[in-house]
Image (cartoon, rainbow, N blue to C red; front, side, top):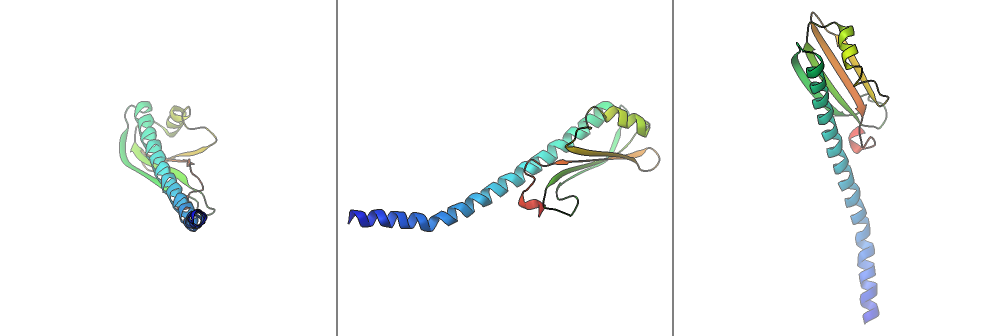
Length: 136
């Protein structure tokens, strides 16, 4: 009788093992998505802070961020931040002011003159969980 209970416990454990594995994968993906979104929010906040500190007469017009696959090709996740602002500084002065912050290999930063005194800054960097389901 005791041997039967042992085999019964082993059998039940083996039946539930696939469900536990699937639940673990789902929880890992959800944690990865949350971490990627928090990283994007922090990146956007830091970009906005850096712009405000380095450009004295800045007027921020629009701030947006996105977490996902930027290129549409491949299965990976990026953190993307866009800020549109106006200033009397030139494009070269803005690039020089931000060069100490945004020149590393793991991020892509573009500063573009829109019209008049309006500029856009686009920052894209790798997500901490780049192979997350959100990139598919």
